[in-house]
Length: 184
Image (tube, rainbow, N blue to C red; front, side, top):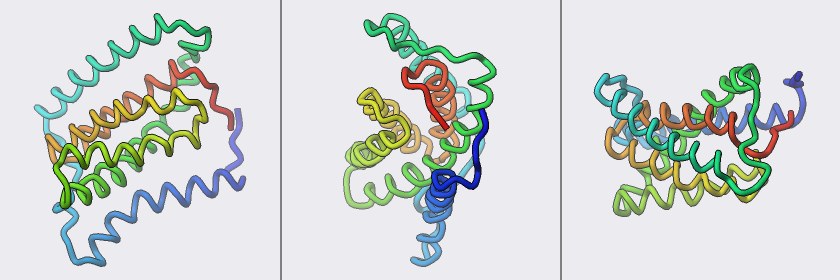
């Protein structure tokens, strides 16, 4: 599988990803607000790391049981380990970019006006349908529920590392089990 990095889709992806990654910090700079006031920080804390791994493990075990007993023939769509590892780098980039934008900027922006849990839901009402561009299948809307867990992790730890770790491991799981083959 080869990817043309100069294709219009690749260029648009790069521009959108770059914008989502850097816009929140630019927003803070223009408004003369500290990025930390939004929780735009990446801190490693051993206790938070272990708790996030336990939460992620529990969620992924549950999702695996569901995927293995899914009534449709399209689930689980298994990829080889090599394919998962190759696509994993994209899953890491997506986790960092999306968590910075959605949980690091948008969710705190909503939380300044609404209850933190309302902010989590509102953020995921925007986060979820965007995934239909990558995987145009109604099952993509199920991303809402892991998105709420990522939002809760951000709220609990006020740090982007826990939801990004959950997101990355969830992406690797989705690459392995997701029913729609991703074509480049």
